[in-house]
Amino acid sequence: MATFTTGNHLNRFVKPQLIYDLQNHEDTFTGFLGKVNKSAATAEGVSINKLINDIQVKTGLTTSGVLTPRKLNGQKGVIPWMPFTTETLYFDKEELRALAFDKKSEGRKLLKEAVLNALLQHTLHAIAPTSHVANKKPVIATSGADDGTGRKMLVPADILKLLRQTDIKNPVCVLNKNHLIDLQAHEESKSRFRELIMDERNLKPVPYAGVKFAASDIDILYDNSGAKKALGATPIATDSTASVFIDKSNTIYYLNDLFFTMTSMENDTRNEIPRTEIRIYGEFIGAVIEDDRKQAALIDGKV
Image (cartoon, rainbow, N blue to C red; front, top):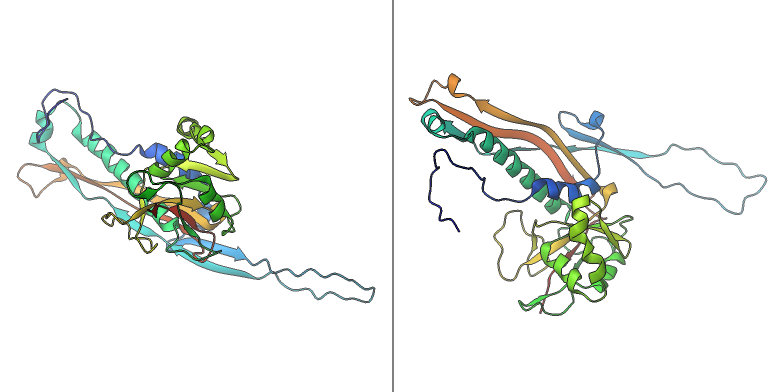
């Protein structure tokens, strides 16, 4: 194994630092999120119209009965953009002259990967319920055997318990790493969930108990009271990780105006040794439309 120190070799192979396989993350669960018609994207955000299905049905009709027509009621709203930016990277003239590989090009790739990973984390965090609300936004703790760390393993009965408390019509569950392993090890479900790793390559979700499953190594954290922790919070021993359920009809994911901002070294008038500076800026929406229902999560129970 190589021993690494700070800096770059000259005339040597370049391997960017290992990070999440972002394209795989995106393909395995963002495809199940609600899409947006481009015409709904405005300067303020995405315009949402809802039609209220409160239609009454009459029975016991009579020959003298008369119906009174009425309008179908609706509501409107705007889900605002969330602006984002990366930090700025710079590459100076002396550095690039000395290196045999294109460090600017590699830097652009790493910036893009960092953005995609951050947006997926934010979206999955936003979709997860804030805390348990029975029969509306269930947050169910796993109930299986101790996995040796004081964490109770996820078992199929936990999935069924959650389904009884939610009105999600076509649920998709994004399993975290531990919960995926739990189901692969369980006697009842292992034959099905051993296929999940293979099916990720073909982007085919594995169904079980009426739920489709995808996988992700993004950790959504809940504290020991069952409340969702802030995105980026430092995990502690009493925290639980979550597998998050998606209801496509109640979610929205839209990436708007993703672009590189660059000042080339040819235009640098400040620095004695000219430098190129690059960053990424954009706007996106990754959220639930209504946060009072159709949300659900499975979190680690503790022994």
